[in-house]
Length: 121
Image (cartoon, rainbow, N blue to C red; front, side, top):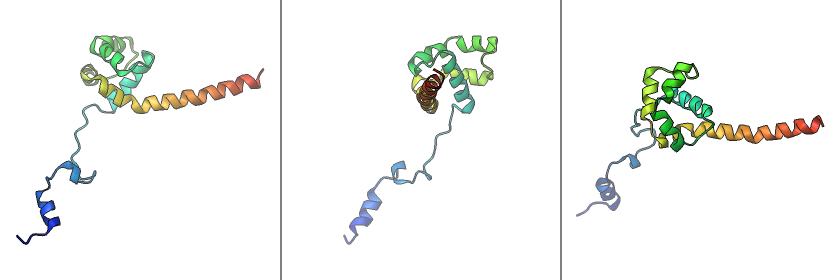
């Protein structure tokens, strides 16, 4: 045939996202924006830091509307509608950074409290 081996490999290889650089890949449009993330963090703190599986049923009910009426949560109607549709996996993904921040805060808070107690005993 007379064709080079590398040339044949390139021609037969499928053109998928794997072959492209990360900068060239087509990104999905983000449905849950920063407003949803902020509202999730507020609700997560109000209900004492539950996991996504426990937080999802609370969001599906009228809990967000009650929090909005009480003034605890200041979000738009569009954000409230998005919170009703969100799945527990997405909740965990959106809260991943905040959980890490809280974990670090608690870790170093204990040291500060212990040093404060020792100092004033």
